[in-house]
Image 1 (spheres, one colour):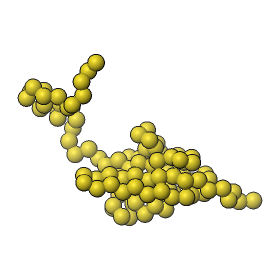
Image 2 (cartoon, rainbow, N blue to C red; image 1 turned 90 degrees about the horizontal axis):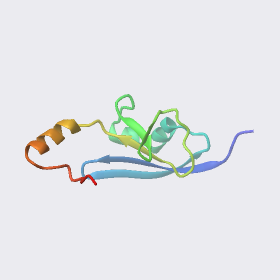
Image 3 (cartoon, rainbow, N blue to C red; image 1 turned 90 degrees about the vertical axis):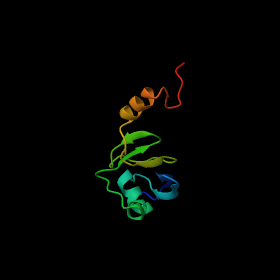
Image 4 (tube, rainbow, N blue to C red; image 1 turned 120 degrees about the vertical axis):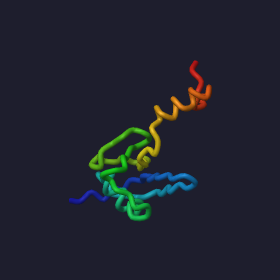
Length: 102
C-alpha cells in the first residue's frame, strides 16, 4: 500500500537583492532533488545541481537526502570571491569582516 502521508518543507534560494522562499507539501520519503524540481526553483533560477550545493538549515546534504517535516532546503550559490582573499585585503586596510573575537 502506498504511503499517503504528506510533509511540509520550505525551499530557499537567495540572490543579491532577491529571495525566493516557497513552502511545499510533498510525500513522506521525498528526497532533496525531488523537492527542488517540484518547487520549480531549478527552472526559475536556471540552477545547475552539479554546481550549486544544497543544504538543510545550513548543513550540506546530498541530493538523495530524504527530507523530514519542517526542513528548509537551501540552494547555495557559488562564491564569487575567495573569503580568505577578502580578509587579507581588509586586514591590509586595518579593517575586519565585522565579527569580533571574544
